[in-house]
Amino acid sequence: MNFTVAIDGPAAAGKGTISKAVAARFGMKHLDTGLLYRAVGAKTLAEGADPVEAAEALRPEDLDETRLRTSEVAQAASRVATLPEVRAALVAFQRTFAQSDGGAVLDGRDICTVICPAADVKLYVTASAEVRAERRFLELTAKGEAVTRDGVLEDVRARDERDMNRAEAPLLPAADAQIIDTSEMDIDTAVEAAAAVVQAALDAR
Ligand code: DC
Image (cartoon, rainbow, N blue to C red):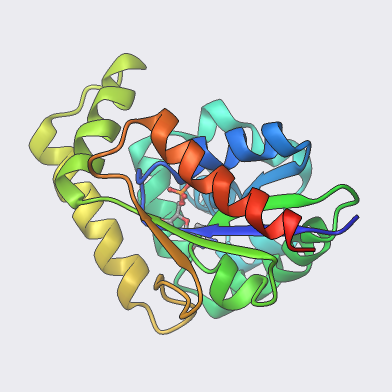
């Protein structure tokens, strides 16, 4: 069975957690496409690599999650993600993944709009910048990163600004995406809301 769930949204809106939980519940594969951009960003930071060459040479072993979850790498990812050649180099991998046998959940910024416009389910998961910054602050401090609330809010806003206003594949809700605003939801409620949309689409097949 091919069945694609496409989930977009800004940083720290909860789409990663929702995507993982939905994939696990329905036995589908999951790809966090932000990791692709983070891996390219990390290479430019660590090796001064050319971002386009880094994107073209990306291997699965470059996607080691722990190393890529820092705020410095997130900003570098957001910067390399503005380059059309970097985005182009990552399209085929994502589209192939979306066709995985048994179904696939992909989350990112342009999955509904560019990568999988014909997805079976399209969701836009969002929350206010303040709520997202607070979640990210708690996540980063739990990992021992020395960050301040104000600094994290500034980072979230800078990334929103860059991700939403870039010329190539900007972050925006697809016209036919269902919007889930998690500002006032706990994570279980948000997962249930997303799972209900997926279940309805599966039932309608
Ligand atoms: O989801 P994330 O925070 O790991 O993403 C890191 C950056 O990568 C994000 O700020 C913008 C970019 N990105 C993108 O441009 N397109 C995607 N599909 C996923 C991420």
